[in-house]
Image 1 (spheres, rainbow, N blue to C red):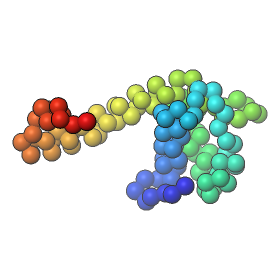
Image 2 (cartoon, one colour; image 1 turned 180 degrees about the vertical axis):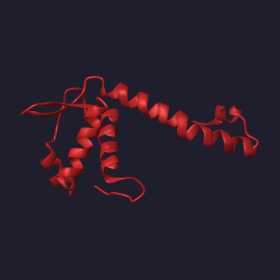
Image 3 (tube, helix red, strand yellow; image 1 turned 30 degrees about the vertical axis):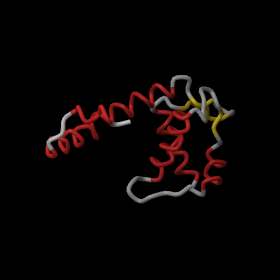
Image 4 (cartoon, rainbow, N blue to C red; image 1 turned 135 degrees about the vertical axis):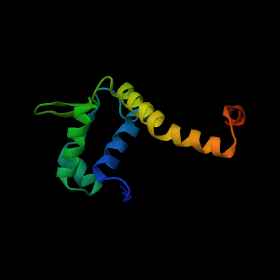
Length: 114
């Protein structure tokens, strides 16, 4: 896994899981690797992976079956979509709208975008 410095590693790893769920490579109730196994696979400390799993569990993206492992939640995809849409609308759209206003553009330009 190739990490970049602008975002904490545990958030980058969480993003990889979310992308896997959105792309369909991880489906509802699929088992995900153990903390130690995944840490070894991607070359990070198991504590970092545990932080990822705790975050995703708190968000309802994955769940833990005690003694068995972690699994993708049945409604994980919808939760991720809701969260990412809200982040897009709150963080990215305002800057896009401001840039469009500065450039004298309006929504009609999207008719030609594919």
